Length: 455
Image (cartoon, rainbow, N blue to C red; front, side, top):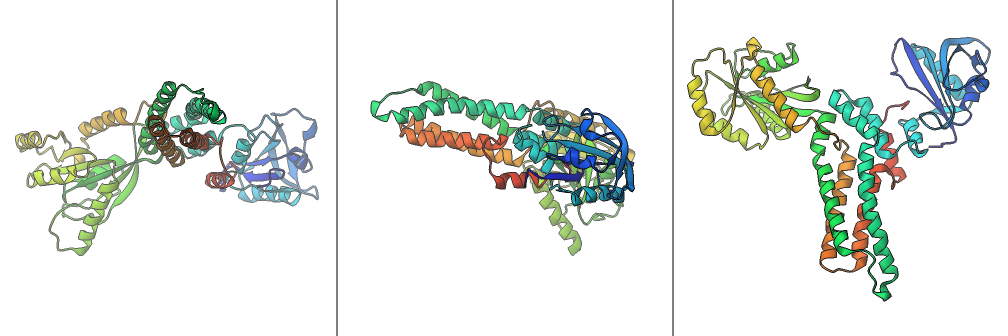
C-alpha cells in the first residue's frame, strides 16, 4: 500500500440508509475535497467543525447536499489529514462522490487501510488495532468490554511489562558474551531465574484466559442432547422465544442439527438442537442425524442433556456415555409437571453423583436451568478484567512460554550463555509480535485484510 496516496472509502454499510459517511485520508485530501465543495473554503476554516454545503462535479452541477468535517494531522484517526463527508443515504450518491474524488487523485482504500495507517503512524499498537475490528464485530456486552480494554492498551501494557523484564536481563547476558574472555557476570542468575519463573506464570495466566476470551468473542457452543422425544426442540423454541424447530410426539422428528444464536447474561451462545440419541433405528436418515449429534457433542463447551421424566430406563448408560465427553453438563429432567416418580430420579442422581434440574419446557418453567446457567457463566466467564481473544496472540504466547522454559532449562543446566540468550531473544520477539514491536508485511497484510472497507 502506498501511504503517500489519498484514499477514500464508504465507512457506512453499502445499503440504503438515512445517511452515508465517506472517509478520505492522506496528505492533500482537504485541498482535493475543497475543489468540489460549494460552501466555506476548507483550507481556511478551523478543523473539527461541521460545515454545511454541496458537493458539485467538475461542471459545477450539484451531486448532493452534505455535512462535512476536516481533521488536521496529527489529530485524526489516521494521524493524517482527513475529511469525513456525510451525504444522503443513497448508495448511488455515495458512489458518485467517491468516483469524483478517485478521478481527481484519490484511490479506493483497501480493507482496513485507515486503521493500518493509524497503526503505522503510531496512533496505537498492533494489538489495539486488532481491538478495533473486535469492537466493530462485538455483539454482546462482555465482548464490547474486552475489546474496549484491549483498545485502551490493557493487554499491550501487560505484554510490554513482561517484555521489558526479559529485555533487561537479555542486555546484561549479551554484555557478558562481549566480555567472555574476562569471565565476568553482570546478570544475577538467581534474579534471572526468578524473573523467568514469574514471566512464565503471567504468560500461562494469559494463555488460560483465552478460553474465556474466545467464548465471549465468538460465542459458546451449547448442545441440547438426549433421547428422542425428551423435549429438546421444545426447550430450543422456548430459549429462542420462537417456533424454530418442529415439535411432535413422534420420536425422531428432528433428523438434523438446528443451529441458532442465543443471548443470555451478556454472552452469546451458539445453540445446537440435535437429533435424539437411540441405539436402534430403522431409518438411515435418522442414523445420520444421530452421528451428527455425536459430532456436535465433541465441539460443545456446554451440554444440556435432557431426560423425559416419564422414561427412567437406561439412565445409567446415558450418564456414563455423556460423562465421557468431558464437558460441562446440565442434567435436565423435562416434563416435571407430571411429577410421578421424583423419588426414583433423586435416587438415580445420588447414585450417579449428578445434580438434576427439573423443568417443564412446554409450560415455560425453566427457572432452575436458567439460574444454574447464570451461576456457571458468572463463575467461569464473567468478571474478568482481561482476556486474550485473538488466536494470533494465543500462538505467540504459547511460543513465548516454550522459549522461556527452554531458556530456564539451559540456565539451570549450565549450558552456554549463547543458548540462554537465543531462547530469551525468541521470547522477546514473540511478545513483540503481539503489539507490533516486531512485525512483517505479510503478518500486517493478513491482519488488516480482515477489516471492513472504510475502517
